Length: 632
Image (tube, rainbow, N blue to C red):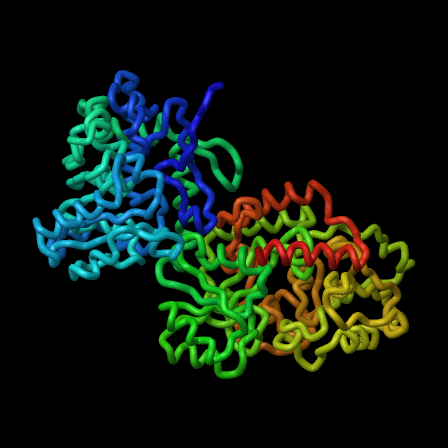
C-alpha cells in the first residue's frame, strides 16, 4: 500500500509541541523522511536535482528567505530575542556547540550516536578551548521535558551553557561557527550565512553548504553522502524545504495557507506571547481544571509555567526554587501582604481573571475559558486600586483605525447576540407582560463574588439592589434576571421566590440576559458585566456600584469614582475592554489570536446549539468528568 511519513515543518509554532503548541506546517514524504539519512527522502531528491526550480519559484524563495531573516523566524520561535545580530559588537566571536534531545529519532536518523556528541565536543574543546565555546541545549531540555547529551560535559570542562531564555536567533548572533550533529539550528545557521560544521548526516549536509566531519569509514555514512554529492545554493535549499516540501495550515482558521500566510500567523502568535517570553512563571490560586488553558495564556507553550497551591508568603519558596521571574495569582485570592512579599522578592506580580467574552457554557461548569485578562497593576473589578484597563481609558489615545475596529466589533456582538457565556436566549416578551408600564431589568450577581466585594458601594447585595430599584420606580414593571451560576446550583445564595416576588414582577432564570436588553427602558446593576453588555446594545444603564465601565460619562452612576475624570466614548470603552485588555485563544487549537478570530470559532461552536439543559445530578457528573480530564 502507498505509505507517506509526516513530520513537523521547519517553521512550526510559537512554542514547543511538547508543551501543547500545534504546528502551522508539516512535511509529507512518500519516499522517506528528511531527518533519516539511512534512505533517500523526497527532500533529498529535491536538493540533489534542482531542475524543478522555475524563475517564479526562485523569486518567491528570495523574498521568502529575506522575510524569514527579517522576522528572525525559527522552528519554535520561543525565547528572548535581541532583534539584531550582536556578533560585531562583542569582539569575541564564539563557537556554538549544539546539544540535542537524547533519544530523538533524528540522532540515529543522522547516523549518529551518543559517541558522536562526545567526539564533537572534545574536538571543539581541543581546537578552541573552553573560553571560546558555548553550548546551547534544545528548548525541550530547558523546559524540563527531555534530556540532552552535553550539559554534564560542559559543566565539567567549564564551558558556558548559553542562557536558555535566549531565542535561536539570539543564540546564533555573534557565533563564528556552529558545530552540530544534526540539529535544525544548523539549517537555520546556514540560512543566516553562518559557518556550520556537522558531525552527523543531517538533511542539509553534503551539499557544499557545510563542513562535514561525519565518520566516512561508516559505510552507511559514506553511502548517504554519495547519494548527495552535489552543490546547492542557500536560496535553492530554502525553496526546496519551505516552498515545495512543507505544507501549511492555519491552526486557528483550520484552512490550508501559503508560506507567507503561515508566517503571518506565527508573527501574530509570537507577538501575543512576547511579553511572557523567557523566564519562568509560578501561578497560585488556579483550580486544577483551569490550569491547562491558563498555562497557554501565561505563555506555557513558549516558557515554563508551574502551578502551585494557594497563594501565601511561604509558598514563594516554590517561586525561588524554580527560578521564577513572575508570579501569577488568580484574581484577588491571595492573603494580605502577599503582593508586597512578591515585590520584595524582586518578582513581577500578575493578576489573572476571566475575560468579558469567555466561552459557550459556564465557567462554573468547568468549561475552559477562551479569554483571560492578565493585569500587572490591579484587576478590572477591584475599584479600590487602578487597573491596566482603567489607566488605558484614563490615558486616552485611541487611534481612529482602532475605534473603527471597535465599532465593527460592537456591531458584530449585537448582531450575533454574543455575551460572556453564550447560553442561548430566553423566550420571553417583557413588553407584553408589562402591559404598558415602563420595563426595568435588574441584573443579579453571584453573592459573595469578588466583583461585589470590591466593586460595590452603599448597595452591596442583590436584595438591596432590587429594593432600591423598586423604591425608585414604584410603578414600573421590574424583571429580575438571576445569575446563571446561581441557577445552575454551582454557586450558593439563590434568593427564594417569596423574597423576590414582592419586589419584582417577573423572575427570569434561563438564557442570556442580553436578549432582554432591547425590551427594557433601563438596566440596573451593582457591578455586573451585564451593564457593559447593555451599553454595547444602546440600553441605558444605572450603576449602583463601581464597575470598570462606570465613571466615564456613559452610565447613570450612584457612586462617585474620583480617579476617573476623562469622558470616554462607547467605542473607546469597547476598544479598551474587548481588544486591548484581554487575551484570547482559539478554543479548538489553543493558539493565541485576535478577538475577531476567537469570535469566528465561538460562532461556529454556538451554531451547534447551546449546552443542553440538565438535571443537577447530570450537570455535576459532567463537571466531575471535565475535572478528571483536566487533572489527567
